[in-house]
Image (cartoon, rainbow, N blue to C red; front, side, top):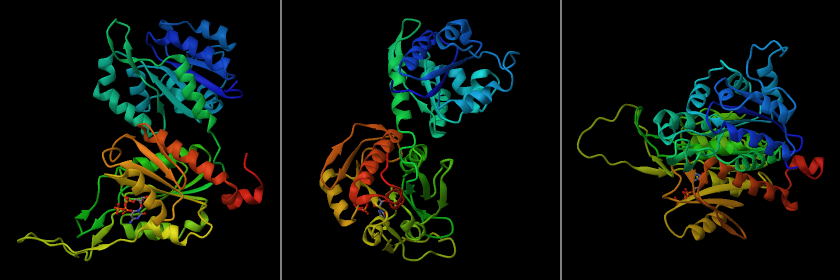
Length: 410
Ligand code: CTP
């Protein structure tokens, strides 16, 4: 009964895969969850609300205006649910969800979601690969939802392509593994750096790099979801601030250094995911540099935030995590960095993977092991990193101060 005590809303869009939602509801209940169903009008054309009422013992919500729901059913369900699983998620339903519409029972409930949100898309492969759908998937993911699948397989019209909904068992597995983590970092104070730094040359130009900040932001989002108190020191990025984090925006490596060093002794964990510029222009021109002949720039070294933190940390943070981007000898280079910067864990990436992308392939290197991970989403990698951090925190020699005071963690 792995989902014992969990409250899950299954929301159906109008697609042929709606019949699989029946199995999904059964599977979630079999694992111990309490399930309520909301459906769009179109979903009702594929499978009847009576089926879900019979399974769950509660009426399926199909209409926000039905007289038998006293109060605001979408607000109640959004508040009640630990997770909302939209299956099937049609092209139309995802588009409406992204644009913030709330004009039916499913969308209004989604808009009130307090817990985790999952979408299991199901559609024709051309609808799936449509740029509008792909953009919506990115937006939903950026806003914290989890998009599960689709997979490649036979579609409703007999064609084979990418657009088939994940099987109910696989959806239930994903929901289960995500809900399992909830609150396991409660009370842990986590400092994260993210994004690039911009080193100004003059009032309009800077030296920078292609880091999108997504890795650090994913770690912040996952740490928050797992109950941590998060401070995110971020370079210039185009990402929405994770809800619930203290966000400190900086521009240059020196500013990031200052922001981190003035705070680190308040944290149990520090994760340095920023792509900090190693050099900055020796002079920042007060006026825009005019073109002439050639131009020679003199650069000077920036402080190494991770190394300074490693050198000065004393007992805090209890766990220090760095990243390494390498083109060769990945593991050895990561191990060297682990020692040189006195870190506890290095997340090592090959230079070909990660930067500016949605997925990452990394090897986690600590003092005694190196674990190569398969390619995965930055969010999934964030959870793997946090799992390691949690294991390091639980080590008797490294109890965070607040836990040592309170007694053993669960
Ligand atoms: N880092 C930092 N401050 C810097 C440079 C790097 O905090 N001035 C941190 C990054 O946030 C990351 C790790 O150090 O956690 C990355 O190191 P890497 O990218 O490999 O760069 P360097 O340590 O500068 O090593 P290299 O000589 O390989 O560039």
